[in-house]
Length: 328
Image 1 (spheres, rainbow, N blue to C red):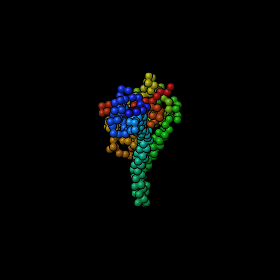
Image 2 (image 1 turned 180 degrees about the horizontal axis):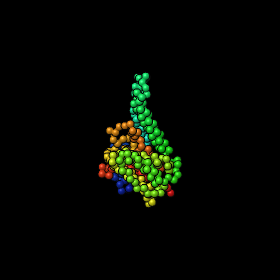
Image 3 (image 1 turned 135 degrees about the horizontal axis):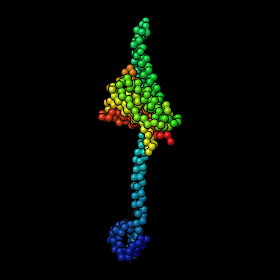
Image 4 (image 1 turned 135 degrees about the vertical axis):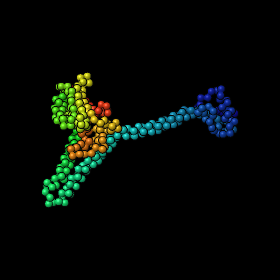
């Protein structure tokens, strides 16, 4: 006799087949082809006692738990990857600033090393001839003076750049008539242009007013004019255009000069501190350039919520374009 007890939902049509399968099995317990169905068989004096248990729900929970565990591990892995990426992305400006600072210190040290070396050498020469007059050693004294002025110029530019970059915002935001300012600076540079046989022309729209620090803006425009006159070459041309756009709310200053084009590889770096496009260029007695002028000019423009860009081709020369928001 077979007695079966179950908490499982077994169709009566297959119950007898299941019982036959269990009775024919030599195992006392096991699983059946029906999903999630397990059995336990006991032999008694009266026959066999078979118990069935439906473990489908428990198996489902185990599968769900396994699936959730896999998803959880995958989610944690994805979160870890995203966290590392975001951390690197967030630290990128800090790393860039740190590298820039280290490069700035290295470049400044290099620039200061040359005049200091010359000055020390000149001093050593003077000390070898304590009985000589000033006139007899004038060349070494003059060389020392020139290098001292060069160091003074470098330190001044470094301080200016540091002040502009550290302030972030412009402390003096009064109205500045940039038309009048540019006209006045062009007048000052006419003598320099005349000495170098440079044709200096301009097209200045009047009464263009911006907000900002007049001293810093004058420094920016003067730097660009000086740069244009310096690299226009003998018998070259410098053309200055200042106009406003009511639609965009911007004042646009363009300074174009003839001369050799800036190499395309150098163009993205000309606003970097201590950068010189022409590596063959060396200091001369009247050269106080350290590659800081354009960096200062860009910092001033950005401090006034504007910007500077440069374009250079052999056919059209080099043009620096400054955009500044008009005063409202």
